[in-house]
Image (tube, rainbow, N blue to C red; front, side, top):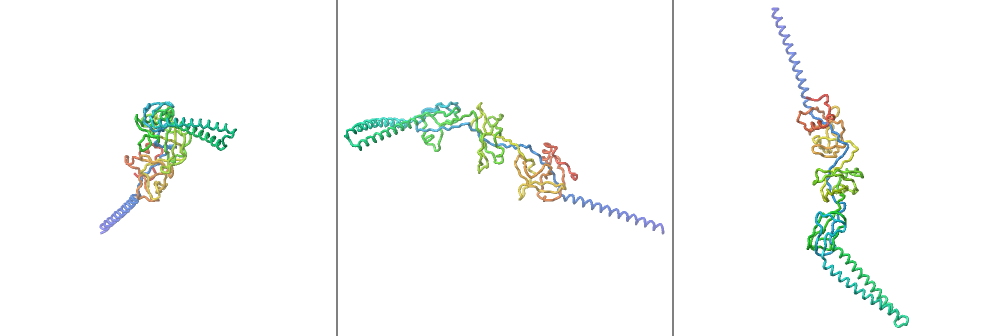
Amino acid sequence: MRPRVSLLFVFLVAGALALGYRLYEDRQQAVALQKDTLEAAIPTVSVIAPQPVEPVETITLPGTLQGWFEAPIYARVTGYVKMWYKDYGDWVKKGDILAEINAPDLDAEYAQAKADYRAEKAKYKLAVITAKRYLAMRKTHAVSEQVITVQLQNMRTEAALLKAALQKVKNLEAFIRFKTIRAPFDGVVIQRNINVGDLVSHEGGLAGSEAKANLFTVADVHMMRLFVSVPERFGPFLNPGLTADVTVPQLPNQHFTAKFLTISRGFDVNTRTAIVIFTIDNEDHQLWPGSYAQVTLSAPISHEAFRIPTTALVFQEHGTQVAVLSPDNRVHFKPIHISRILDNEIVVEKGIAADDRIINNPSAGLLEGDLVRIVTPRPGFDLVMQSATQESPSTAPPNPPNEGP
């Protein structure tokens, strides 16, 4: 009997131990499951570090080249083009004849003016002689003083008419000189809009054309003026001493240095830009008026700026923001000010610091103060982060102690 009782006791003890171990194992599994569940409930994020940019701001703008002087030449008399002597691209000296105009109407008017002058001259001579004779008769009182006064005033009237006739002749002589079109200064002909036989108008262009058309355009190209519309945020740097790097399509491998000349000191209300004029030496005449130019301006900046990928941006009702992590890995949204937009990056000049940990590709479900867990993306998943790390390995964010697998 006693051996059976002992055996039963052993079985009871073994069963109790097995049951206790099972309960303990289930409890440990529940604790582990709870821990895994809580960890899975914490969002995972990848972080990047803002990349500092050089303390120089660079901007590339379109520009237009013009000659140091550019003179569109219009007709001042009405007539037909007799002959033109200078063509596109011809170099001219000041006073060189560009073209001649036949103006028969003007010639006839000039001949009439000279005839009128001769007639007035004869009348004036007669008036002078008559006045002298009447003055000679004053001593004998053969005529009244009224008659003498009338003759003297008639002489003065004829003198005025003679002077007016002479001035008309001179005016027409001045217009006659406009029949010959001359170069106003040394330069090159960049436009010729006339042909032999064209009717030109004294109103300033080709007769019959809706808009005024200049006959020629002459440009002085020993030095060029470069006109650039510069945004207002670049205004403080536009001062004497500023230079620009310039390229033109026809000479893609050559760079020209443009020197600051002046600024309009007023912004266009439509574009918020100011006209800035630079000068470029062009003694070799490589640059042509009217050329399109790419103008690169560089200026030092006093504030610190950083470069981050566009995938880190958050757009909310408060404006553009980024999500950064606090020391205890909680989300905090910071507003930023963007100064430039690049291909897949932006330059931020306000709102972030060099030691900020910025969440890349933040989820729309992240809220202010949320606890997150930092993970490192698998190779090839986050190309932007890998590129930034390769460019600036020293600025990559350190792995925090609670980094996931």
